[in-house]
Image (spheres, rainbow over the protein chains, first blue to last red):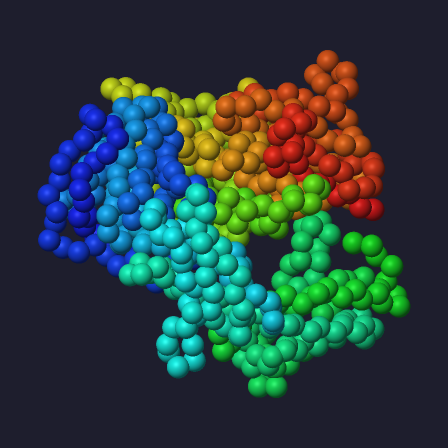
Length: 311
Length: 318
């Protein structure tokens, strides 16, 4: 879930679009908008049209991501009247009866908070970007490329993908051409944890970090009424948090039964008390040195000599 | 609002003067619960949670993943507290067989109930209330909002409290829902702000297990106790020879048909069934003595509801 910050942001705008009844000229405000968050993920709007509903007195989605110059449209699909307004001087849809629509376009990057003046618990925000960029997966295995995708405003013919180098300089590592729907994607190599951004002239996207995933090795041996489990990683992840999980049939999933930390030699051992057949796996829940989380394959351990329970 | 505190016997301290003591005694006798009946005092609050509808992340039967974003719902639920709202009785995740549903309030015909309610909704800051089906109460404890008529118990603002009082009459035997009936009712019910009342007969033997099955649409899924798909919906357990009782309730806009595999039960007229329709605010309890091992599906037999998560497993072992 995207966490919505409550900072007071102010809007500089050119005027409301859409519902003529709600149209209103607004003067630019002298406070700059809040800066766009630099660690945003999955910000690519699925379609060009960004629509916010109000059913059940809730703005949904609570946070909308849109590009500079593209509209956000609010639709009152609830049974009661609402409105969309910012806390300080900014846009204001005016009263919207059920079925009404209101659109707003944002010429500058930033985060804009809004709420309904009729229902004080209804609030949402819009994040406006010059270029949108996201990664399909937030981590990549060793040697695996990362797939980045994004959207560009109209008029952008080509986008360069840059990676943050060891020296702190951005270096071009790829490029993409936006399609008719202005979406673009690129595959880029990862060398351990990486940070990427997209550029087109002065337009920049926020930085997208792609963690690298370590390989997690697990071995499990039955020792009478318990099972000894050994965990290691490649590359080494000393101090990483690790969880031991076993498969619980009636939950149809793996469930954590123990937690630990990898030693300086990147090892951890667990003892699982169980006479039954078990499938176990280890999960690095939090990597170190910029690495992300990773899960080992599951290994099966036969039943103990005395137990035949099929649980 | 302050409420005079009562001990579980429900007795008020007698006044000092003799006449006053006699008067108090008369009042006490007139108000006292019939012999053998109990008074239950509870502290229940409406609290915000970030609820996970699909903890195992998938529909295991169809082998399809469930999107991370869809799984969670910020909502308000009923949770039980210690005396005077000292602390939550069961902090942390609810037991697997309870889910989102509020505390199961149990009693017998003739019992009195004093339920202190506190609105701790700091998330949406909405009013809430408690409205109880099936039991006897004065209008002040109805808990449903009628502008110009209802009192403070019908729309309790955040941070405020109200005490509901009701009794279980002879005709209150059975299972009943309780839920929000304030102006926020519609959204609250879609978010799981409900629970069950289970009233047994005076001499009735309680079952070994009582399974609460609350059916309802939630967050785009069809849920049982606020969970969707096997492994997330309650996993009930019983052993051969034990008596099990299924308390089935429904709140929302939909009709459901409750069905259990491998078992059947009797209607009032003595005929058998294994599937029963239940409409909004209806409730029923069915009971049997367990006689068949296995991992049995229980689900709503409206096919689309089942496919959208209204299905669970029930495990009977030796």
